[in-house]
Image (tube, rainbow, N blue to C red; front, side, top):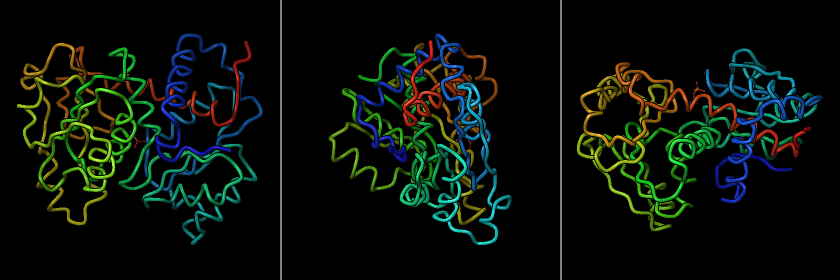
Length: 307
Ligand code: CP
């Protein structure tokens, strides 16, 4: 039995296979409409979500499976004090696979240790969000035709942004990847990611606070929201929340083939006037999330197309 808690749980070859399967599903969805008949996905969400929970549900329904779950701590027995370990033991009696989102880093790992079914990390605190990474990689492959030889700008809250941490983990295994880390001083990428990933693997990167000067050199700009829910001080959040606002004027500084990604939700960091720019790819990214999660569910359950 396999779990998917971190992009590094899969080899590069396995990740590429999941992405290729997602592309095949996108080409011929009818071939996959019944592969999960009789299977159930449990979504255990202790933290709010729109995209991740609903795209998992959509993915399982598209595969012909069924879904069950809860969408907040307060609507489950966690509110009465039940542990993650006991919850997943119980859910293992009800479902074939589980996706868990939790505000505490490492909660999906605990779940996996006590689970009798595959566990997928749907986001744990400020740590990892590996299925967003599959989504991001599928989007980049769709737009650029490759995952190698790219300069990726990561902009915003690089300290608490779990999507950034997972994406760096995953892309650092491809050749010719270079990162430009654009953030306020206090929201810089955590030292453990810099040391354990970028420096350990000798990945070229530079840090800057200036989005405008970075734009001309980028193939991909990955914008992120300042993660209000991870701040201890509301005043500090208010001071930092509008550090970067991508607008039409700034997009003029970017190459014509530089695409803008954002895991969403967006607050204020991409002006709505950018939405009509052909380089704005964040809603395409949302669609990719369904195919990526369909492919992941199939892979973890060992399902094959019926046609
Ligand atoms: N990208 C993402 O994780 O969005 P949600 O918080 O809405 O799931």
